[in-house]
Image (cartoon, rainbow, N blue to C red; front, top):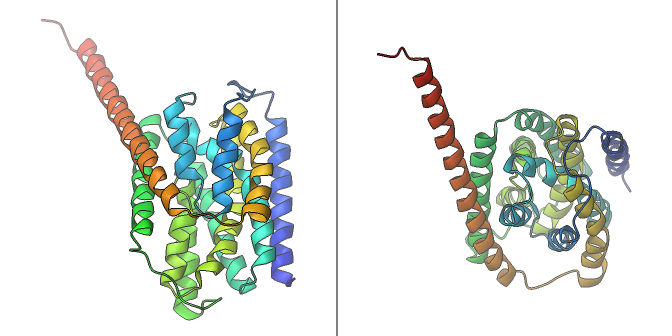
Length: 304
């Protein structure tokens, strides 16, 4: 194991220790529902099982949470980063240990993503409800388009390299910073990261430690910001954290691979439905805000 990988694991475990200690300490001050619902465990198991196989978890989880309607829309980004964090940490350890790539590239990309997440989550945690609804609706539409393009084989198959040099290295690190920031509004990193590195000539298998290592640092970094503001679902996040443990182990060591194309088409339908629903919620919130503003202006106007 290289020095860079040891450093990555050291940062990963240290950051998560701070994350879970902060989460534990925040339990008394959280004003929402603290206990998980029984129906939330299978959701956490399902999304993290397929996440380990590379399909991603943010878009399908957002779609399911929106369909269930138990969480306010503005709590969903925080719930994704907090509740799915343990899965990301486990996947990082498994994939980084199993797939050997250039450790300098790996460390540079995961560090840039974590920095982007820290800055992005600070912004999202203060965004008003309509802005989050619009951002997440747009994120779901993007995810649906990526799934469609993947199924139709419109995305590149990738090269054979296990590292990037020169301008390709700089582009990869810079874009991963942006992808880390976008995770704060619910845009999953897996699919765009894989597309980006394969376009730059990296072998598709090399994307797994990069994208999972990125999420392994991104989610606790972003999650700490959401813990600070309390904008996440406490009980839902507990259910996801518990359910992910058997799901990740089963996917990584038992199942390992599945025909995911049919599943992606199902996810497309669910995600597009959720995107439309989220954007309709945004339109309703925006209209209500305008209506309320007009009423306030009318109440202040002089009577004839």
